[in-house]
Image (cartoon, rainbow, N blue to C red; front, side, top):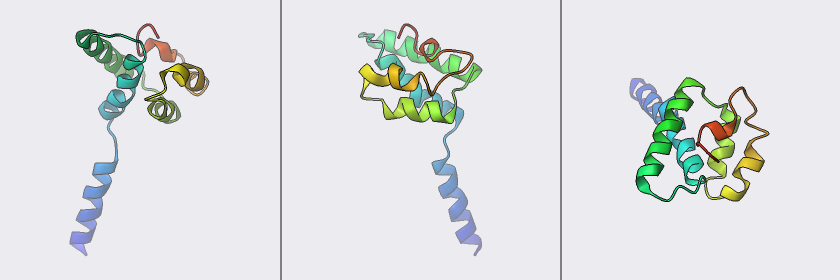
Length: 97
């Protein structure tokens, strides 16, 4: 029984995302959608976004929307802005979206 409980806790820990994981999950798509072509600029955008996310995290609904639009830059802002309404606009996380 003890092994089962330990196995369940390990599985649960593997499924729970940390705030840093969430930041990377949303900052990648946001920075990709800014159209910044150079790898160094992508890294700078992502680093800035992660810092912003740590200061003012997005809601779970907003994070889910951004992740769902990872490959749909043309609709990311239009579809996710209404879900991401908060004190800091979504565009602040990815720079000049």
